[in-house]
Length: 201
Image (cartoon, rainbow, N blue to C red; front, side):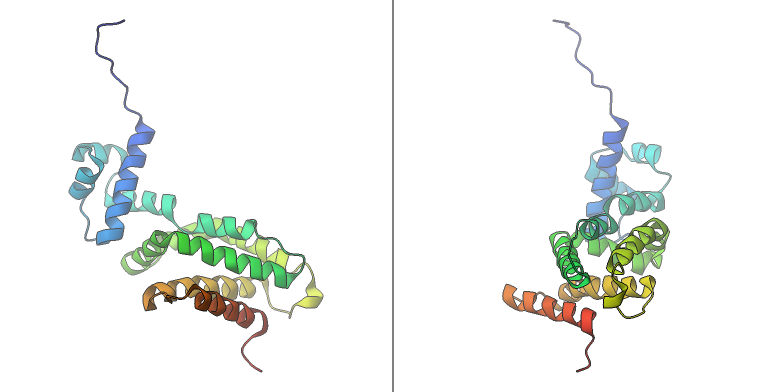
């Protein structure tokens, strides 16, 4: 056996992910402006100078955190994986999948709040062009049977869908979740009916 001490070459990709993960935790706890690069250095166990090897500053680091942890990835996956024999079935399945995905990852919503409050939503806006195409694909699936829908544009239908079911989860976070899961399920069913049929009798 070689008597020389074994030396593992640092993995730049692993180190970068470690920094991003540590920054993510601190941004969620303290916000962007409340977090310093020195704190991220300590949290990640890496020298402060090493952080600047990977990121020019905190703004670039937040951009990397947002790219790694923004909610679009899981929300689009939920929509892509939703199936239904009718438009109504598709909407019901997609709404449940979207709310379930958000409920499982509250950190994603907090990151969005940070972007909206501290960056005026610039990272959300930058991510939208790619996201918009996939949302449009889902809208086209909804419109596959035009006879079952009113003549709304695909953009309007997706704005209403995304806004309604995204807000369902965020208002639960802001107002406090209902302690009864059955009440929560009933509320979601009501939201689905509102989306499908409106509120007028």
